[in-house]
Figure (spheres, helix red, strand yellow):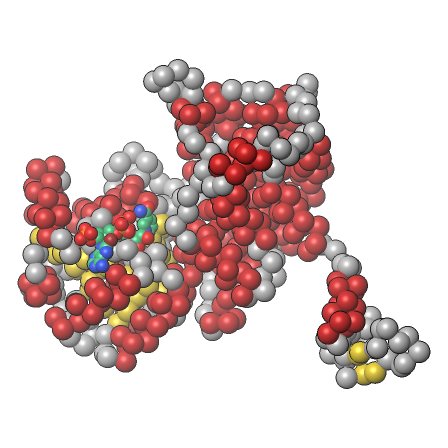
Length: 499
Ligand code: NBP
């Protein structure tokens, strides 16, 4: 046995992560259900990859297990769900107590909790690690979010730290490398222990939920600029390039600028030829469902998922567009003012979106008994992952200064940004509404901001309605919290009763 680690599942992620591990000096045994994929990968490595001698292809699971040093560390990068369970079941007869399985797929966190429990009971260790950054991240430095026992993490840590993206400790910026196609060493690694059992996969799921809203907000900004200023894709790309220099600086803004300037071979811009129906694989939906379950008001994140669902109703929308009329679209004259307003709306809504994601994790950690370090989570999202952004450093700073921060919007930096930007945010929404342009993420983020900062909400009436038809009781503003009352609303002469 001479492999430092093993990897099962040579899809896009598995192949790239295996090469990343080999590049960092570790010998890795690889196995894939269909062995011709393994053969092709090993042949590719021999031809193209300098670290090919450290990649050992295995056709059988027994051979694969034999080739890994004990206690074995085995990374699974396969389709999440049933495939993970059946692969674990196939592997177990070849493993020994103390071996560590690391699931790097986008697993449902409750599955990870279950698997950790089952495997620990059998004497194995199990780590559920979120892996973010897509193909390039996996190859040159992903953001890695491991959850499981600390003892198992201690064994995996050197490898995970070596292969993760790195950020410059001075500037907080990602170290060049991933984007340039070369591995990076030195710097602060974008991985850290997240928490017990399913914590890593939960945090990865929330990362993806935030990714949904981040993307949707950028799309709404693009849509407003396109329609209200009648700009072509290249002109909007130039605006995003400028925004890239300021507080909105992020990977998603950067790729949006790239996308918008791409010309189509048939003429015009490619983005205008892409059909406007968005797909989804489930992590956004899981985040929204978990927010509902946790009673965490992540309305903008959920809205971003619904926006994709609405986009998918292409035929229905096309038919409806001939029946349902909106107001006439009026192009705006003052370009600079509108561009500035949309910029601020985007920044404010983004702050709210992240506030929702962190509020959701705060709720979940109470439910599942995790102790999440939000400053560190924001830090390991600084590099390698899809939502990497300069702005995340501000989130780290906010939680470092105040670890008990109840909501990101209450941090002085963020509250000031919201106060400064909200005028523009509201003006943007007014324009969108007047012109009949849908901006569900911009507006639900504003509803969150306005709701969260309201000492009073109309829920007094709501609770009264509940008490009227269902005797659900209510608390009174002039009595201590926790004292409940009921009144027979249709018979006002009957006295109110404490319950
Ligand atoms: P896929 O999610 O498509 O998984 C491909 C791998 O799963 C292949 O090795 C395939 O083997 C294996 N597999 C399948 Br499919 N069903 C299997 C089964 N029943 N038993 C054993 N193996 C099975 O590829 P991916 O995009 O590389 O993603 C891998 C994991 O990483 C997924 O959980 C994904 O959600 C997660 N992830 C993906 C990204 C991304 O950007 N793509 C980012 C972050 C995380 P075969 O070759 O024999 O069919």
